Length: 120
Image 1 (tube, rainbow, N blue to C red):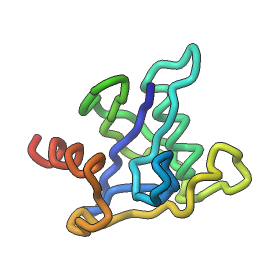
Image 2 (image 1 turned 60 degrees about the horizontal axis):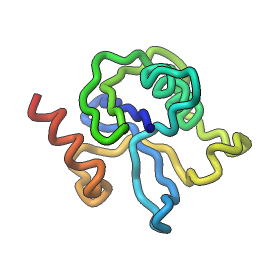
Image 3 (image 1 turned 135 degrees about the vertical axis):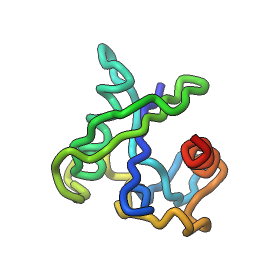
């Protein structure tokens, strides 16, 4: 099971550029595996902190499909920082704020979730 966050600020979405299992390099929403004894919300907060340096507050669950939870969240602390020393971040190349109109950065996984959010 996976938990991830959509964090939007100033018409930009927080994303991580990473290697994925299928071998591609893609821009993804920050998030990751839900560990044992963790709720999806707890996993989401931990993963976003590990991957981006930000502390977040979840405002609502946006979507859930096949054990993948997507939450809408806002930043409550921290600063943008990629910790390359953290072993779980070895697949991450870059962390950045991506403009919502920069459509080439979104793929068949991230675009539908952003469309759900923007239609709400």
